[in-house]
Image (tube, rainbow, N blue to C red; front, side, top):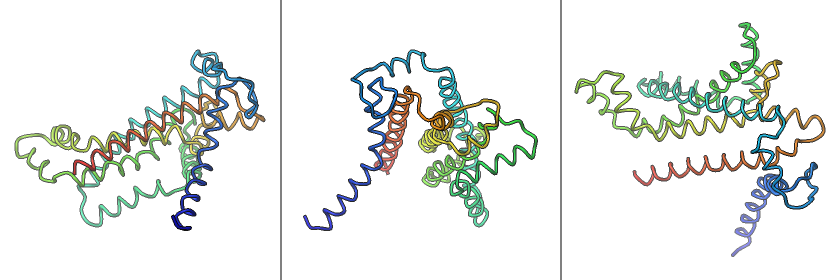
Length: 265
């Protein structure tokens, strides 16, 4: 093995250690009751018991509930909107399709803080009281373009004549959409839903600017407020570990589905 390969592998391992060592530390210290991270007081599952028995603080429990409900609802709504939008964009021709694709890419390239401030100013301008609904709408707005991006490759792989054939055989446009197009783009729709859900539960900046001052907290904003007090609630350590494992499983599912679809080609 020459020096370049050793250097490349060392660099790769260094990056992996820098990325995953904080997560590993949190996971390790989730198995001890110490209130201060880094202080090992012996192996214990007490924090996990508190987490799953419901004895955690009410504010943290509500933050988890809000995070999951907003994540699921925003993923469902953005998946429906994104799938239909992708079909509409796919049926456009020439410059119209290019222009709409360009507009769809802007929210994904836009920094989260710009998106959050823009939505905050929009809600203030139209006089909408900020809270659960505004956060949900904000999450739908930035998740939908990712669903479009997930569905579009499946539409390009689909035989364009199948839709026309379904219409010729007597199907209505709605029936052709449900029974012909949707089954063929289902893998992209599922991937888009999982991606939208992951983005929603992970978001902080947009949520911070659109949650208002009515006391609504999601997990990310709760952790931010908790950290500003000078410490973190101990039950956050097992909660972060569980969230990481859930996201990891979702990513493995996406990658598995993608590899299976690529092998079928």
